[in-house]
Image 1: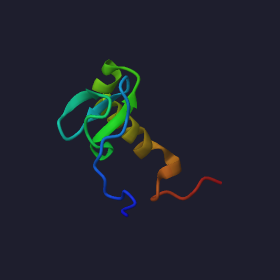
Image 2: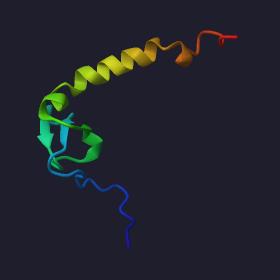
Image 3: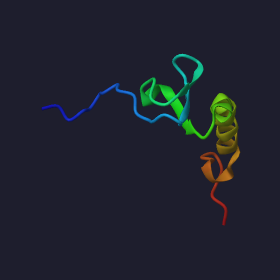
Image 4: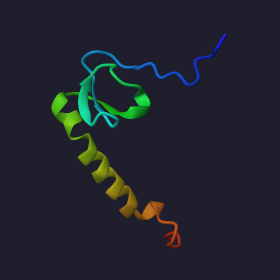
Length: 75
């Protein structure tokens, strides 16, 4: 009996909002597999800003000195 690895069955529930990377749109509940989504978000509006939020978080991470490999650690 398979253990469920490699499943593409959507997970989530109605009332949760996601941004689907595959379809480039906001979706409510389990429409697409989790591997293709960002979220869950509390509202449709928040999910619509998912790419901007991810970009902002990525920029913060890149600029965070704690994650810089090219600089010596602080004393």
